Image (cartoon, rainbow, N blue to C red):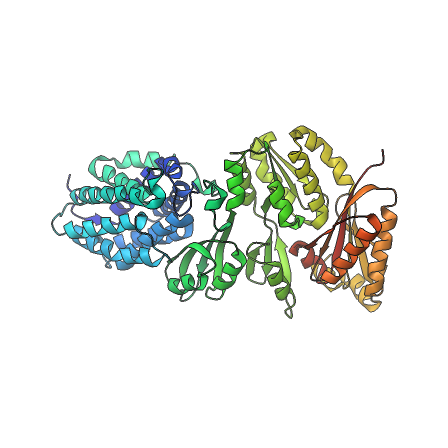
Length: 600
């Protein structure tokens, strides 16, 4: 049967058919993925992008081909992941932007739009690489354009385009990165698979079969990107970072220019109202800073730690994975030493939202805190974030231990527990019954037990004992933030300010902050805290300390020096207090966390 025109319905079905073929080839595309880094996620990224397109096309029923292309382009931008996903999104956006305002497409009109769409794909990349997906898209588009006037039947035109695309695909083997392993470019293969799916459908497919098969596809959006390289040397930058942004007049060229020097694999795709940005970088916070200057709203932000994922996938390790949240305040050297998987809290200033320690640094956080009228808030990660983390880890580990901020002060524990329920006994969620470095000390002890080869059951049974032997001592020089956060009533806060009371806070057995002592001067506050701590620890064996502060390094150093002198500690780790602590206690807060062993 000849097809001389395409309307919105036909185009929608064709795209869905192409997507179906991509879904079927996901694992293979992941397997041959070696560019821009060999991170084995190209198939998942393209499939996730097409899943978003398919979902929106089923909602939108229009006979206008221009509208169908617009739906596909917007859905691709919103659902795009990774380099290849964003390139596909830009390809659809180019088709939409260059297509006439028409209800139907002839082969000639389609060929012209396809050719004009190519420059959108090239513009999306900071450093376009020939011999990859973009070369295949270009060659295919030029072939389709050159024959669109000769072939008035879409089936014949598509068959010719397939021949051109497959020849171009074979040339990607000549790329230096691909020579040694003798495979084609994964993104380019994904594009050819997409074309092949369309051709099979328009030449001999049935609408009924297509609808049934698409309904059975897995949920690719539930999978976390799994960046698994050949070696750590292949990962020049640690974090795969993506943003979906909105604005009144976004300029993707300007976005790419702003990000120059912050990383590689830079892709910025989209329209003047919505764009997706992808970059491999060591400084997601700097990327966020640059993007914020041009956008009016950051709709979505995602940061994946590619080095941690490499260790999960390509090295020998324990059968137990350890997860914590950024409120634990462990220093990066400890996190790296034990390969602890960290889930970020959300940090909120007004309408601005950040991923703690990732898209906002401690210095940036302090600057914002010091602005007049600024109020920091935090919120726990979504259950979906925990679910993706657990699902990904269970591909590489037998079990997961997930330790989180005390239940009375945060919903993180409950969110983690809800997400873990579908994994049964494989995921054990632990209430640390502590905050900041108190939680961190528990996480560190569990990490050491995992490293020592302790069994899952032994660790779980030992955690309550360790947890009971941890305490936090916090000095708060100003009660203003405690009042605003609701941790101190307005009446008590007013009295505290009137009498210049500076509280010393500890935690009860459930992790609830309580006032344990007070002082009336900053010097007296430090002395009182140390006296209180000394008395508390007088019958404790082998104490281990950690110090945290919120923009008061001199107080933290004072505490560390005291500990080294009086408890014979060679080194005391000093860390920045998390926004979870700072947003409730304010600048100038300092804390000592200590764990100990019971007397024999």
